[in-house]
Image (tube, rainbow, N blue to C red; front, side, top):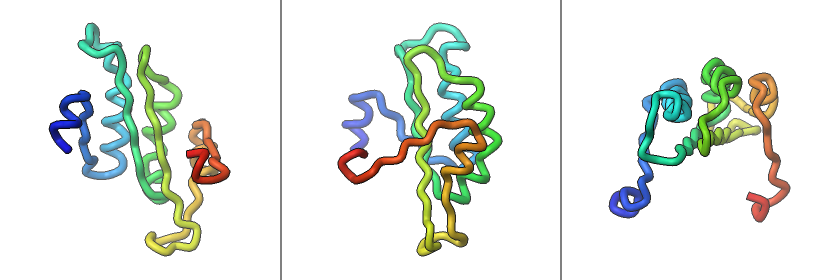
Length: 113
């Protein structure tokens, strides 16, 4: 997949942990503050399970309040495990996102994704 990603200028960088990954996404949104950029915008996507959402709350709150650059976007995806099937604790992230001041979208079915 690397040649296809490179062709479209997509950089997949797995985070060492949830906080560092969220901080990297936040940093990517500041690209236009630093001066000229060779790209019109940057999109960053963060994914983590429920406990990672809680752990990264500080950076989410600050990044949300700071906003993004022109033609930039950040998407945060929280994977919930309501019955604790693959997590250490049951989790539901929508209240955490609400507390961070982040909008939440609720798809009603798989087609709405």
